[in-house]
Length: 382
Figure: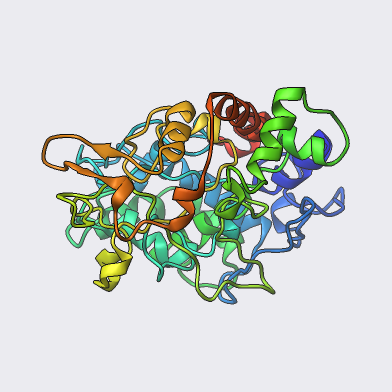
């Protein structure tokens, strides 16, 4: 895929003077009023977009500004971008994220590249299916506190945007015809629209597939392992977004997969540490203990540390973990041999890797970095 195509993919996120649509631009048409038109890379059909929140350039431009605005938090210290920084592929490089009040989140911040195609939107909640619904948790959630908006400050935070002369016309353009467009519902819709433009598909891997470059021998060996039966990586990371939860507007996964990889086995009971017990926290079904979503591997070299709890620091260590068939926690509160977890996905035990294999896989995984995505000014704070 060419750099020019990627520029077209992310251009709708621009505000101000540049074109905000991937379609043709009229000299007399303000960019933010142009009709929305997807311009997508190979393998990516348009994502599912809620009928009550259709895409528009004006909405995307507004959402970009809101995504980076710290005034969206209760104490005006943190924005969405605080836990999803562009240079880290929209993660925060912490093992566990921290909210606006300093509270530590129990889980690792997930990357947002191609988030519009994710079938579910958190580590382990099969019910979170839209960006709009998921966003209620980081904004209004109390356990843990993230942006820290609550019943006592909700009106105050909204008033920051209602009284801002720069935001007023942008909300009016994005939500034309509404008498009072500056609302929480519209803030969420605008940010979700921006997030749907976070498209990453111009890595060295993508260019290799397109015939624009050739991998070196180690990268080629790593790719063969990745998609082969020995390493079995593609069993959980085989979609265009290198995960196994991938939906489009015309093909929506009805039963997205979650996996127990043998990270824990407290006391030999199969248990994981509370409150990080995976899908079990939602369903209370024993076999869902320790099941988490397989994260996208796009830009994975930039998103360390890894796993739902950020407990593995490097790609090399992740491959050591999988080659071992799980993790043996030898002592302490969480002691137990994860390799023997009764709920572990059986595929994990089938992985066979030697030291050279692991080095080759790391070389391949590094080809998934999309430098244009993490440096494109159109996705940064306006």
